[in-house]
Amino acid sequence: MSNHKLKVATIGGGSSYTPELVEGFIKRYDEFPLTELWLADIEEGKEKLEIVGNLAKRMIENAGLPIDVHLTLDRRAALKDADFVTTQFRVGLLNARAKDERIPLKYGVLGQETNGPGGLFKGLRTIPVILDIAKDMEELCPNAWLINFTNPAGMVTEAVLRYSNIDKVIGLCNVPIGMEMGIAKLLDVEHSRVRIDFAGLNHMVYGLDVYVDGVSVKDEVIEKLSDPANSSFVKNIDGMGWEPAFIQSLNALTCPYHMYYYKSKEMLDKAIESAEKEGTRAEVVQKLEEELFELYKDENLNIKPPQLEERGGAYYSDAAVRLITSIYTDKRDIQPVNTRNNGAIASIPADSAVEVSSIITKDGPIPLTMGDIPVAARGLVQQIKSFERIAAEAAVTGDYNKAVLALAINPLTPSDTIAKKIVDEMLEAHKKYLPQFFQTETVN
Image (cartoon, rainbow, N blue to C red):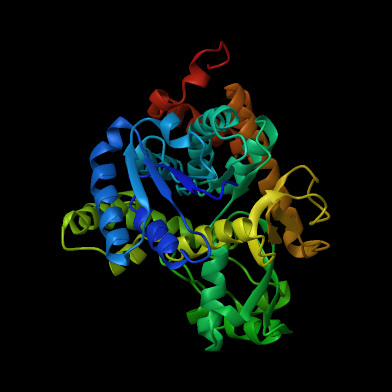
């Protein structure tokens, strides 16, 4: 990488999460002396881009750092000669997410951003765009790292590894770092002293062991997680306690998204009730975002406002900029990332994307060999990986039958007939963002 400048391009720069990212670059400037930050967005996101971009400039000025911030609707200009590309976009914006959440509920199926039908359709909309970005990167910044934060991060990383020529791709999520922070709080120790052996998939990751100062404290943590008050570490998923018999026998740390699989009925009932009372999560987030952007407009605001943590993106900057810094400095520390398995987890194909603790080097992540996921969790992880694989193939090919198959094999879908009905309605609802499905003869 050039010594003269360090350029980062953020696709989806108008996101409410951007101040998190900017705060991360400010905090780690000594290790990662960023020169240019390009925030790119689309025409519909122009107003938000300007509001967030101006806040970013004020934050950097307040920190007294020589980082130039560029705002653009020209993605190619942002990508040109970038060293790192971060992606945090939402095809169809929050209105599309609201449909992902509401339509499945009519069929008695959970509607959620990254799980079940919602995860499928977010993937179908997102994957063609991320593959376009990868193609542009080949031409404009062939040596850059693609750090993807766009959900569903596991499926998106799977698609880039499988269907693009980009090898330098890493998927990232704030759930593992949130779990680390939660465990640190639970044990009343500094976060830096805690390390978890992560293995699984994005939003389907398990903690196989947990250490404080290198000493395993898993038994103590499992005991504490048996208390219903300690079961969830992410603000946007309300914790419901695990049955002690279940969590103790599983003998692994769960992530908050496991609630959708091990407490399917309760989470579905809760989603239906919430949708009727205060709206789906997307509708709640739309209100939160309006309030955030009102805050962001304040010309006296020159730090990340604490209210952003309510959005569910807490620790994003720590995760994203920690990763970028470790690649840049060849730090060789251990971080959980989405990367090619390469044998790290025995029961998942070597060429598939997994979320796993990895040594972060200048040449990218080296996954730690985890052996295997506990037999009690293995089948569920393999089922979700099958879903991700078939869904990614459907996204790339526009194959209607594959989309139905993907949803039918997802454990949150009760039958193939219901899968077909949901796919039909959601394809129509998202038609504008799914052109690949409307150029073939296979749609019924």
